[in-house]
Image (tube, rainbow, N blue to C red; front, side, top):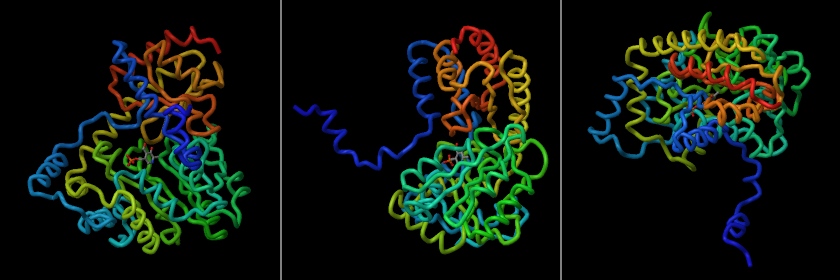
Length: 399
Ligand code: PLP
């Protein structure tokens, strides 16, 4: 007799086996289960600012609901928001303004990444991405039956790309190269030299570069370098950005891509076929975020800087652990190789025994093996508590 579970399993298509997942959501679910059993957990797993959305943005969202901004919108987003993004994103990067037609808005940057890759990759095409990296890129490429070609990020180079490996791996099968700076999970930041090498290769081989710049407002020193600043790259690139990280708006779901017009039309077609459009009042709130005061964004980054200094000096004082000081984003990518290479086992142990939730680095690719990612989007008090717990629990770990 077929059980109901077996029947349901039989319904699923083969493509499902090719989907990856973001471990952060799974670890968060386990951490919540432990909390429901009465355990105290310090949450350093999920990558979201712990701040409230700034007041003026919340007001704009509430007013938009009251003014009945509650109907469908064009799939690429409302014109006012697309115009706002086209000029704001250009000013931030010091480049000539884009046009409305270049901007596609989605419920978060993640679906825009998915829809863009879906518009670009045929089975067998090659996509190059840094290893380790944000898991959504690999999951989508795998679903589309494209070949993911990893290029290492080097801890010894402050988590920049191994440019020799990149040059050796690109070729005429390369369709897409994905970059992400500031970087999740390492906190590394690419310099203009890195972008220049990628741009030269893009011109030589004709691939398109997806530059995920969603952490561009969380940078602790130096000027932000965008791929869009490099000559000739606007026609060869997709800039990914959004409101989740900069404005503490993760749950609102609002992000965007800036890309050549023809590609934008196709990505909008994918929007049309999937979520149709982003909630209208959320898009209105997005306009308020861009038009309103920038101080809340700057203050959040300053707070992250203090937390970074606290967690990095704490981690580096614990025997067996070491961590580069991240230059951007809000992640500490801790080298645990003196203790174990089984990062997931150690992350599970720290959660179950120590009450500290982090992510095994190998959830971000093979290049993350032997590291643990801690998100320091949490208060200084909680960061100190986590450090005390790690210091106490670590000696009990059986590698
Ligand atoms: N890109 C990177 C590198 C991320 O780390 C994230 C979220 O963690 C996203 C994109 C997606 O953000 P959202 O879909 O909330 O805009």
